[in-house]
Image 1 (cartoon, rainbow, N blue to C red):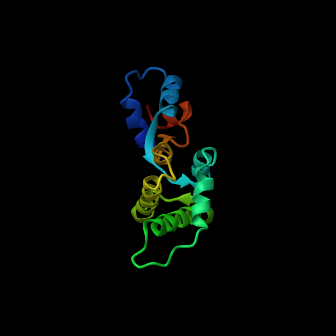
Image 2: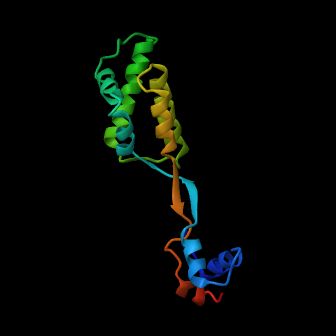
Length: 151
């Protein structure tokens, strides 16, 4: 997080030991938090290409739907495959902070999993990409910053 000298001073005061500024700056620099972040589509491909799942999904996405009304189960799978491939090819990231986008992506992955085109391991690995560990203090505070904060 972008910090202020006031927030830095409060963080310093909450540390268990406050006698060594260099140690305090290092402790604050090493603090992390887990946030919900966007997923790079290339990271998804790194999960599903080695397993062969991407190849199978691409094959299914290139099939023609039957045109039946109501659609057949295979038509639904073809549609999910096509949506998944389009998502990976047209987007650089999946914005998980946008509930409509992320829920749609999860729905497509769930459909592919139920059709046994994506394994539960792959879906779990993709879902875990959402959680990202980031530094709490950006830029990392220095001893000089702590001194300026008046600690």
